[in-house]
Image (cartoon, rainbow, N blue to C red; front, side):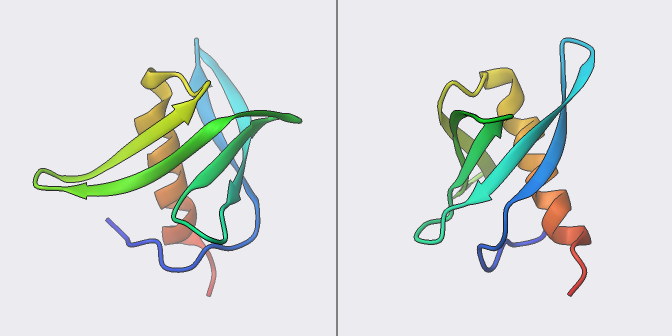
Length: 85
């Protein structure tokens, strides 16, 4: 899995919530490896990656549903892996 190197510009991701694709806005934190998540104009929390003995996991705080954390992290990773240089 790719390593997120530098925070950048806000970007959109899509996650599957109760059978419906929903768009979330991701705003990278310039001071930390955290990402703010917004549903339209409402902040729903933050996510960030942590390296553990078992590999990389995604953590969250705020109103981010536990069932979405891995999906959101995967979408953020995919954005950076597919981002044109």
